[in-house]
Image (tube, rainbow, N blue to C red; front, side, top):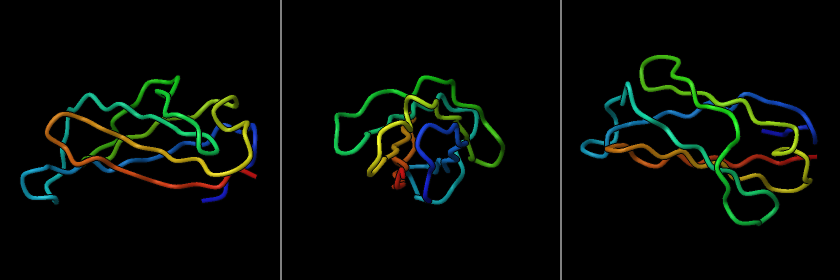
Length: 90
């Protein structure tokens, strides 16, 4: 996904069980981290909310999307596979 620099997009993440790589993980405490333009990962500022059926969402801040280049997003939770996503900030 292409993200306009300095905007506040909602980024979804699907958390699935490490046991079978397909069963939705619900009620988890999800941590989302971002790497801006090849920098070190930092925890996202805003809280992660559960949507349903293993889907979670976080709204990134303008500061988190304020650097042009690749934006890597990773989501982790106990007993869940790591979710990885790649975006381009322009």
